[in-house]
Structure formats: C-alpha cells, structure tokens
Image (cartoon, rainbow, N blue to C red):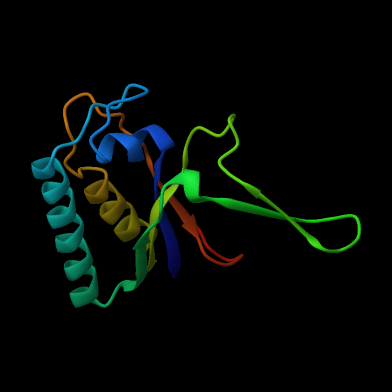
Length: 136
C-alpha cells in the first residue's frame, strides 16, 4: 500500500532555519541544519535500501507559493502566497510503499524525532493513504 507521509511547517519555521528567530521559532545555526540534513539523509537511505521509498522531497518556503484559480474568462488568475491566515503548510513529503499501516506509522514516528533547536515548534507527521482503498 502506498502512503503519503508529510511534515508540516510555517513561514516562521523557514525563516528560523535561515537564522532568523520569529513567531516562536528559535533561530537555527549551521550545526542544527547539518544535524537535520544528516537525519533526513539517513532515513531516506534506509527507506531506499528497504525498497519502501518511492519519492521524497522538501519544499520551498511558503513565501514562494503561487495560487492559481480559473478566472471568469477561463484564463488563470495567479496570486502569491501564502495567505495570511495560513499557518502550517506542507514542508516536505515521502511517498512510501509499505506492507502495513503499522510500518508506515513506525516510519512516521522516526521522522517525528528529527533534531531541531530547543524550543522549536513540534509539528505532527501526517500519514495519508494514497488511493481510495487505503486504511490506517
């Protein structure tokens, strides 16, 4: 069964990772960033080795988001994001092919242990089955 495993973040989190404390997110330093990258690389390598990794990516900060809607004339209407009311957004994801809901939950729990500076917000790791027949 395939699953989408998502990590969340906010614009404040991205700014903190760039060294600027804001919105309850302490500034990250180079050592914090390297610890996170090493942690994620280890997870990705383990998942690739087990054959469970289909795809994984981190996403650019929310300030680089574009929203596209169909205009009344059928032409696209493009606006910058994020909207002010948007707090948490998708920060990165894995598409995994796991044998059971228990296994994908085990992986998500490991992802939730990603190192970060003390006081940084702890966002949940979200699991969604891909397709209509998925169960958790």
